[in-house]
Image (cartoon, rainbow, N blue to C red; front, side):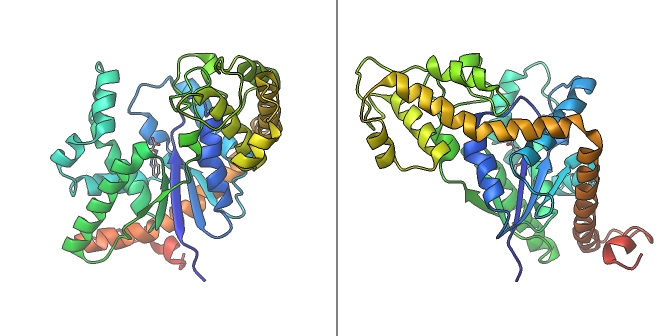
Length: 343
Ligand code: TRP
């Protein structure tokens, strides 16, 4: 029985929030049993903005450790660092010759980033979606869990795959988006609860980070924006702050809105805030502990990542052989022996 192949990646930039945990990471870990999951720290993508090398190295390892701490299991899934597998950059070049300037020019993320990084609009920022297409297509990926902001990039990956296949035969699987069930979209900024909780929010009180200490979490929830109505109802239009707390509480507890409303029928905002903080602390404390353990012991983490890279590399090479062959590029004598298993 072949499990569908799932590929997902995250950039090692900025810390991840409770919104990322509930909306993405928790969904990823839940898919591990019935999918063949590949999880990647996309460090090459992060180079499209300037990074301090020493800090960057730590951020990359931090994100890998965080993936593991959140429950990604290297026995079930492949977890690795993008730059460990050279085929990503190699395939990106090949695919760039199947990607039109006009297509890249339409990408809204490129337009946004050109505005926010006006002093450094490098070619990598422009071709970023091609590298992302390579990540996905390299593994014969069937499904890609994506948030709203990455849908356009996935659409481009599909178009490139279809174009390549049309010219050179059925080499790539055309990936489908897997719209993950609303979690992240639902978790809102604690200070401006009509906006999504974003890792790039300026205000510290606006977002709960996955690695926040319990005291910090409690403080942030106590200061969360609510309203003066003094009633706990599920009315997002008039009480976005209260509804956000209800949603967070029930996401952390695995409860329905009905159960949440019943539980908080006392209408006391103070208790809603503290109990939501407690539920989040109970959820994140084990993650934080496991993260610290992993970061304290570089050998364990390096071992896991080396094995992940090895697995990913062998899988990627299978696709590279097909792509190079399809394009008429002469194969290097030794290169594909190992991937074919006849080392
Ligand atoms: N562009 C994605 C983001 O910023 C990260 C990413 C890179 C990715 N390659 C990917 C996501 C492949 C899914 C699949 O969130």
